[in-house]
Length: 409
Length: 111
Image (tube, rainbow over all chains, first blue to last red; front, side, top):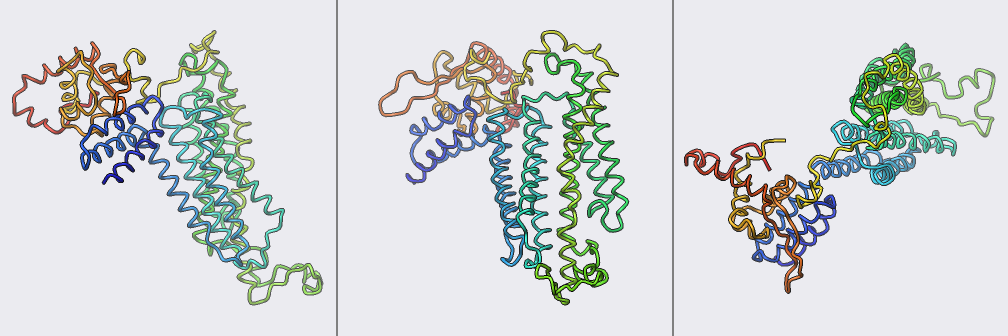
């Protein structure tokens, strides 16, 4: 019992560090008074109460978020890590899984340290949780898709150039999460409803684009969805920028936004909307391909049963004469085409991830600036010297400034 | 902000314990013994009361021999007035009403 009690006391002492500095003394108080409590079950109960205090005061949400991320990371490892050594996607998937888990675990710490804490309110926190869920699901689905598309590993050797592209894509995806984290810090001032509007518009657009082409734009019978992608890439940031520009012009909270911020607000919201749409549709498309690989239409000459060099042969070439030419045995040709089709499917949405935020930022800034100018700032109350002063940061709910009334008043 | 004069049964018991000796400092375990509350219940209540400026807290100034310094609590003048009002409001209630509220929140958590 003594060892157990000592272990509990040690755990309480260490876990007190989870609390904000101003509340740490309360956990230390429980620990200090544990010696007064009779040894045995009563002292154990006292210390357990202290641990409950830490869990409660550290914010259940924080503990739950850590546990949820740990569970999701374990899930990602279970899904993405396995793979035969003959599968050429196995090492790539392992790099993706490791890189994703490490970077996503380090991002909150890095952003908090260098940019600042999360903005108060439900929207920033919900956006962060949603962003993490999207990225983890995307990486897991991509790993399964690539594994299904590289079983004949000898014929799908990943060359250094492909490695470089894959690493760039991983960094882009993590960049999305970093951007989301920065967008939801106190330092970035967004007009009221700017973030929910951007994310909401993006999710609706992403859902519609996915419904139009579940396997990606131009795939199979949904080839016409490509034009909708183009339309969405233009309309989404413009609509978001116009709305947020108008919201910014109406935002009369003193010292929150400087006048004439429509373009900046539109830029941020437009980028947020297109990034959300791109990430959502990339995730949904990858999940669909991972779950239903046989629904992916076969590429090229597969339908005719030809090999990868059908055109080469048709042109009079000899497929076995060129030492650099890969010859697929006739018995493997169908499987080869199935796998190459699965591996190449869904690349459109992934490639769109690279440019989506830039399109959104540019068009959103234009639309937001236009909305701000047309609306004018005559109704604003935020002009003058106050506009340059720092934002009135709200005290995080439930945070204790000090334990003495004199200090808290 | 909710009405600060409406406290839970547990909070009222803590206020009653602190009211018994308003000028003196009490430590957590003493309050826990008097109220019968567990540490996981008592300390969140003390934190909320301190946040509202009804309770002040400090550490013992001198290091006593043989034990760690204690965290001490007492009511502020505002806290004393609010506690007395809340306890007085609760006292004249019929016994049956109090029994119904026993062990549960009698009112929205005020602290």
